Length: 243
Image 1 (spheres, rainbow, N blue to C red):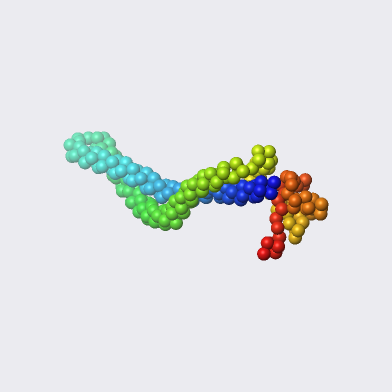
Image 2: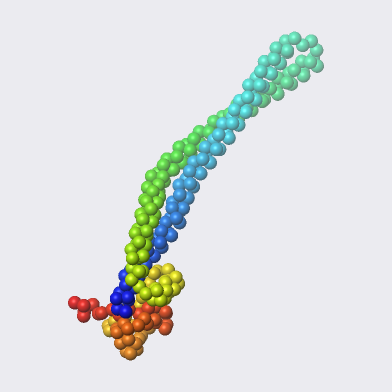
C-alpha cells in the first residue's frame, strides 16, 4: 500500500502541474481579448476620423460641381442678357444671374469651411495613426508572446499527460477511481492530504486529527479518507526527521 500511495503522490504532482497549466491558459484568451480590444479601439478611432474626412471631401466635391454648374449657367445668362429686348426678359435673366452668383458665393464659403474641417481632421487622423502605431508597438508583442505561451502550454500538457499515463498503470483501479472521483471536484488538482506528527491536522481542511487516526495513516495499511473534506490521507515524515 505504501508504494501505491507513493504513486498517488507522484500522480498528484503531475495533476497539479497540469491544473496550473490549464488555469493559466484559461486567463490568456481574456488577456488577448483585452489587448486586442485596445488596439481595435485605437484603430476604430483612426478610421472614424478618416471616414469623417472622406465625407467632407465628398461634400466638397458635390459643392464644387454645383459651383461649376452655376458658373456655366451664369455665363450663359450673361450672354443672353446682351440679346434680350424687353424689360421683363431683362428682369428675369437678371434674377437668374443673381441666383447663380449667390450659389457660387455660398459655395465658395462652404468650400472654405470644408477645407478648414478637412485640415483639422487630417491632423486628427495623423495623431490617431501615430497613437495606433504606439499602441500596436506596446500590445502586439504581448499578444504574440501570450499566443506563443499558449502553444507551449499545450505541448507541456501533452508531455505531462504522457507521464501521467505511466503512473496510472502503477495504481490499483479501485484506488485510482477514488482518486479520480475526488479530482473531478477540485480544480486545483489537490486530492491528497499530507499528515505528520508536527501538525497533526489534515493539510487540506486543517481539521485536528485524533492520535489513533494518525497512527493508522502512518501505517498506511489501507486508504483512509478525511471525513471532513474527503481528501486521501498520506503520511509525510517530518522534515526534521528526514534530515
